[in-house]
Image 1 (spheres, helix red, strand yellow):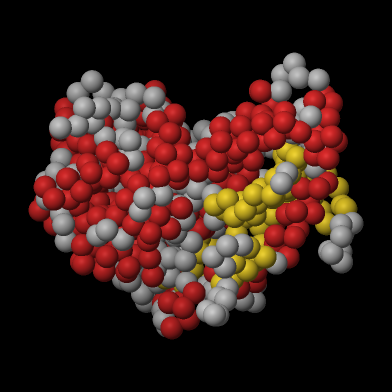
Image 2: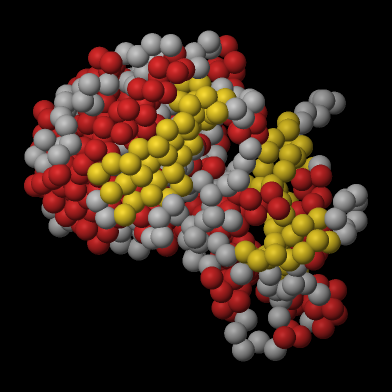
Length: 612
């Protein structure tokens, strides 16, 4: 007899059962079971697959699901309840087959067949409190999604529940405020990165050197918390966020500093957390926090450096300037932080290639506004963002960041088929990216944009060289290693690709979804299908492209039911799917890799309509 093995992990657990199940079965067993099984096939399974969950088990009147992402768990629940509600329009209340759903985030024990522990028990207890058709969540779930626009929650009060010693605070998801999907339904690598929060011009986020790496490294570590917008206009949030991202990017240029990544830093936005708690969670020494108040062309920026463990202020200063001076303020803040933290100032790394005059200030503002539009991931917003970037470039022809941002809009346009001539869009992207590098050749973000265009155009040698330059300019950037690894993988250099991605992953504990997606593509290309499935399921920003890769990996392991569910959901999200176009966007350098992909696509039901 083999020994049972367990693992412990943090997971979002969704528990559901049919409200009034015994009564419904007494009324009409056949109708009740028919409704339940149709819900499972047509609603539950697709919703779980779309949000990369794992159905752990089915019960007579319900089911238990594990998710790696809290947002995905809530999104799946919302979709299930919304679609069932549509079916029940006009059905008498006493005949309705409805689910109650509870969700909790907590530690669980898991083996190959089941999950256990208080994290699971609490989800089940909260589910029992929910009304028919309702979704209730724990405080741990609420904390993760309360600031997300797609979810509206209301206080459902404290409740005493069986097996839990203390009253449990609960929250109700307000169904009539929900959107069907929680993420951009991305198809391409560019789109997946946009959905994950990667932004043009600041595409490659600073490193999150924490956990074991931070413990063993003597370099000082810092997190830049999102700056607060103190103005009366909430639409100026983009300016405060842009200031934060610029400071993260600039600080990461110093190899003697460890800088927490943007995607981790922004989880603290609008949260009241003590610096000591941040120090413990991220294992960092320093916190930079601040605020921005903007009125017309005047801006007041306050910044303070805090010893994270003690909460004591090390340095603080306020800057009242014209917007034209905003780059100078950024320089000054970064310089003072570096001087305080490392005891020396490496000015050669901070010399900018240009100064900022009145037109430059307006250009900077236009790029920040464009970035906010670009992240909405629609054809219309993509064009609007490009128009703002082009205005910025007209005002300041030496603004390399505007050029790189224009390149990203054309790449998005090509990869998402928002253009009648995708190749022409890629040609324009290449022109803009090359111009960005010419304007500011020491910018790793510009070389990164150029590398992405080269790869999209299947110019593998040039793409590899661009990413080598990207990493040389900023070896502290985990995104650069991940994108370099992806480029090597499509060139057929799998061993080196895995090595580069491993470097990137070791630099960051909380990886954005596209990291998992990129890792999964290498696993697929090297026929490690189970590892690929695990990587794709671990993605925290599931886009339609992730579902496509899941479908073909399931197919290659003969898990055809799962493959069909993922493929059908993919096609639902991509109603205009065209195999030949999609194949053209995969930049394989080797014919054998291309044929491997076609074989898997065909087996998953996503291949050519009339294969030879």
